[in-house]
Length: 433
Image (cartoon, rainbow, N blue to C red):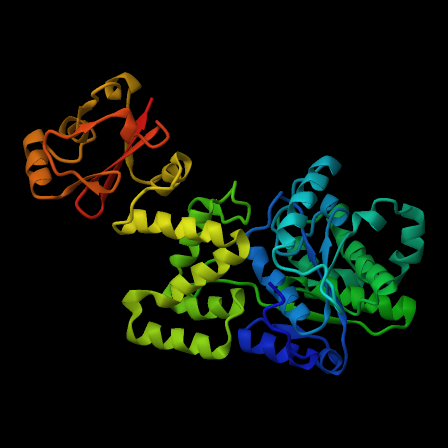
């Protein structure tokens, strides 16, 4: 993905600024980014065995960082994940076991390889796990060497701590110590990789600047913070949440079809910003989609391009083609050939469904009119016959031409699914049991 364009290191800040990916940065950060090649990291929380679409914004920051010639580090929180970051949380997180964390980390590593080039000449991306240095820590040595640089007053002044102190839940000592551990991460990467930048969401400002201060105190070095906005929709709703829950990058958690639909359903007011934030399209192309939204909003060209770009990036071209095929099957007149029974159940998950026993479709099968009537596609068999004669009834998206047409097991996709349709939009899923 990062090979598409290579630009100069000095353009990185301007790229973030134009794309709306820059929230705040420490004094001197912009000059340092424009002057020289730097190494920067972003931490990822392994609370699940998949990233979700909310994780894509920091991932894209690392992508742009690498495209501009800098060295990106994806830090997996195998150590800090055992504690839990209090930032933006009203209550303490459920603590995970070492086994759960290691499983989650392995899955996330695979996903990260879709975005970052770990073999790129000159500035290969790095992936590290802070469990390597945090899990073996000696508590007494850590408190003596690191804890002495943090006053309680300094920690209490940070928003992530302050907001929890005033809540009913309060904050445990476990989470209170998170800032020290994240700061130690920054110090460790400064020492081992020459990392002078930490980036993250705007809610991480306190933790990141604490790490930069630790580097100054312990090593006398200069380090910087860069934060990106937290994504919300134009209506103020938290990005990435649907009625069904989070939208995941793992196709087992969120199918490519559902993933594609999530982006396709983006509101007009959000589409251009999402094209800037989540794709590599440049200003000229995005300006064309701005024009399309103004002049031809009904075509939803910006949303289609957004869904195409992000689905291809996360799931690959083959999964994108299948998601587009499934979308055409649901909302157009596309055929169902090539779609599996599992995909069809996903595509038609929200339509009405019923069941028919296998023996009723065996041999000569049953009349289409009878099956459609049992499914409730119209109020009477007579009406369904009239609809068939008028060309308004479908079996697996193929028009039924004859009122005497039969439905057999051969019509059941993988022997499991039959799709009925009345008119353009009224679907019914029949499961063969």
